Length: 156
Image (cartoon, rainbow, N blue to C red):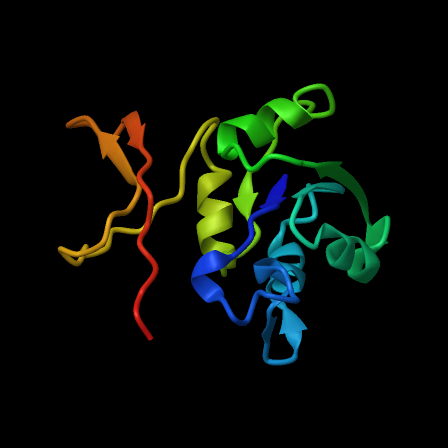
């Protein structure tokens, strides 16, 4: 499941006419790299689309690199949990949830798959004038809470 519904407001003006997951990196959309990194055990991709989602559908179609693609429309941007509920009837067995606008490393994806449940996060130093979502862990490294906050757009 790849979440690709957002408006990409922090990347404006680049995202006025292109959804953020379709922004080109070295001539190809971010999403193309994500799909190509997925291990072969994933034979179906579910895109949750919203803002300019037709561009994603036009590029990838119903099959890309031998993988079936299903599209779920998220009309109201109500977050990751809401996107999961939209897909709950078609998610079967084991699944992976990825952000459509992130650039992943194959080793990180494979490492996550070693566990029954996992969350891939990156530790960052937070600037004082910005807010970020945070994953909170206990002493053993188990996820105990996720704090979501609004991110202020950087000044360019």
